[in-house]
Image (cartoon, rainbow, N blue to C red; front, side, top):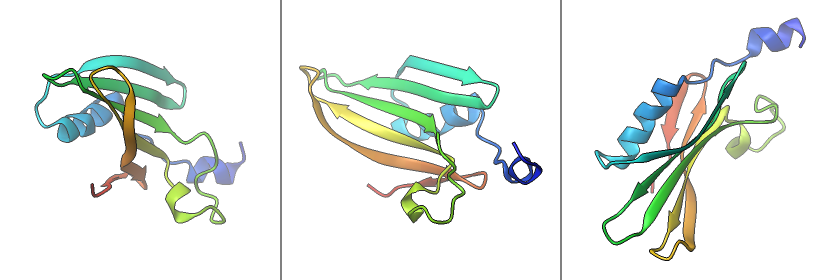
Length: 114
């Protein structure tokens, strides 16, 4: 890693910061932690699941970018250090839909309007 890359390296959110965003998204609902991976570069993967009374569920997936998100030639929608996506499942476990719900850049979370 060059000095310039080290200088421009963005601080990623901690597990507690990511959990706080998850809790804002789920608005007091109970959740289960599905997967968690952390390394020298911080949290790289964090997934939780919320199950509704009718058996439908929502999975929230945090992942940090695995590419140089600071590359100005990338589309604006790809210039994030990390993102949280939601995946919706019916009561039989079949995926219904999914969407990006929040992006992290320059030390701040940006929530995507529904």
